[in-house]
Length: 451
Image 1 (cartoon, rainbow, N blue to C red):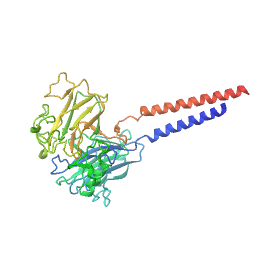
Image 2: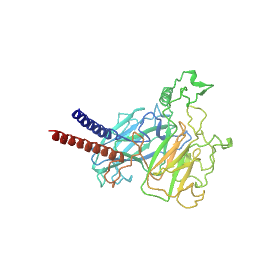
Image 3: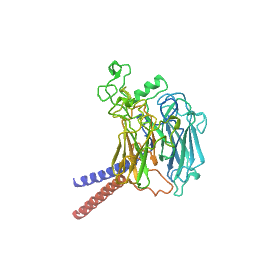
Image 4: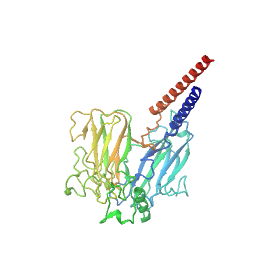
């Protein structure tokens, strides 16, 4: 009986060790993405076009990192086309160009690859990017991209070649390396898309956002209004989009001042005359006029301008409560909330400052410290189809499939060490291994004594 128990113990130890090591390997994320890796959560990066009461920018720059032991790097674009599901208006051509960037500072000029959304040019000539699917391309890591520490670093410039069109193009980006948005003078837009360029595409999008939706079911509507999406019996219940976005940005070092700009958040009612509780006010510490980085022809001077359309629209199928706000969360978990962001086509400054007794015309919140590390930007209550813009001064870093931030590779990064969770798994394996060896040796000693 004792021999059987020891054998069972040995088998148990081996199985537990195998399971832990397997889990450690499987749980490592495969991709880093922006804004997310999930295909059906409606969260996208956005190029806005003319006629949509929003800003029109033509470029966004990404940093891509691949480890020195990787022979290739994979680049993926989700919904890279500009038609049908998730997009609006006529086709716009989007250009994706990958440059070697060994310094990791966005100065790279050696072109490694190029792709086009419609397949009219580039490495994918004749192969348009698909609708509502991932387009992937595997690129050989090149010597021109190798940094001093051996990592391969790239600059990927994404350009809207047709900003004159009345179109909205939504897309996601991913890589099997690391990913971030460079803090350039070009702000970037994002949206929870509910768009489609024709009626079948629009219906297909709503069916993705609302898996329980029965468009022709009269029980879904009440006098033209959709039922309450928080009601389990409502056909809108169980949406894939909860109204929140999460971005993460990386501060290399601690700072005395943290500036953050939000643009075209559409906070407030349709007009200031509609009154409380949500009125965009003149922000006292935002400089007058139009910021130097703004899309001047489509930008309103910062004031209390109202919203076109308001974030909290009346149609429930687009609505996400509360009226849009956001929070900056420090690496230590301190939360700093902006409860009155920008209105229509304007920019507002949100500043954290360590200066004692900082006045409202200088900063928004006085803080004890602004530490380095990974910060979180949490947007709350963003309606479907409300395009917003961010102007940051630090790298917006990608997330893995679990939506956890992935610190980017750089030219002087130290060799990575196991995360705490991995150390913990190794410790458990070590413990069970020693435990098993001890009992097996004890068994042999007991057997020898009995002999």
